[in-house]
Image (cartoon, rainbow, N blue to C red):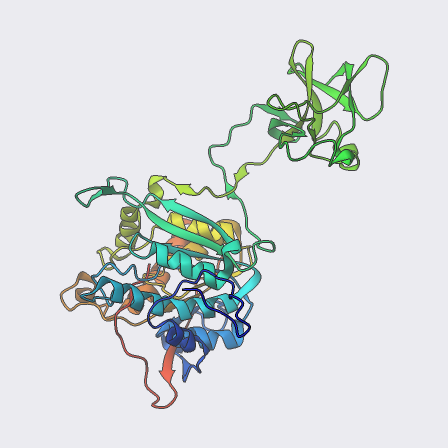
Length: 457
């Protein structure tokens, strides 16, 4: 139905994602917390020196409290929220009602999360098919569709889980920036990288210096269109490399970028003349492709790579996460923990060595484990804030029988055990293995928050 302004001109139609209860959900983010965080020194580790924080309580009021101190100060957020599979809190006879309830749960939390991120900050959100579409639409609204950096497909179940019509093998992880044009991310180690050539600086591969994008050509980038000169009498090696310069010499070969084979567009260089002059015969050289054909090439030395959207390695499998927790505890005390490798690679991508990460569905505390492991490997000083409801474990569960009455007890103990394991594996490793425990307390009644159900990673 078309709506009209008072002057009878039609209002512009816009797309809006909504659900029953959306306005009330947004109001939750704006309201006062009504709670405080009480320190719990006796459950903490190295209280006086640690920069890490573990908070027990409902994450909605916790996020409001964190905003008072950490607004625009969290470099990265990772969450593994409830998947709404119909087996936990969000059980309704009507699927639509269940989806609406889930949307109303996640919406105010993401509104608050955005306020916490630094201007160059990023957020990773694990999810599966049940709420993927809804989560993406909500994130598009909260963070802006233009700030959606990508979607990871995670090979969580390599052997597939049979659902009758399809063998499900994957989950998703949405990746957003607070501001895509200011976002800062980092490369991952490329352990399979092999170099074809080597010089005094080390191994390298080669890549043509010209820009093969037809959108950039000599007409609109004239400053990137100029000649190099290859000096035939000055070979650098027997592998076909020659000295080059920007000045012509006797018997030198003049080289311009080639034209595109498809449309005959004149390509340009990727580097300006000024930059090329700085690195000539060090990082850019001439190369003999075949008899009578030469190219200007750049030496590519990086042994790192940008994170891939397809995370297919078996190290990302859910069973790996289960095995890691079982190894630490000697029992299966937690269901569906995320694998350490997944969180490690996300942290490598989103965190600098002294940045802070927040996980407000922290579950078994895989995120905290990953942060400590990275710091132990490279001497970094990354820190974390974990938030988790003290959800009660079932009286018949392995966790309960092992003495863990709620999820927070599992998370805190995992951090303790993981820190000891990292020290045992490398006695010289230097990292912050401590954490300060705070418990959410209602200001009106002076009691801790209830222990109802939540699912974290």
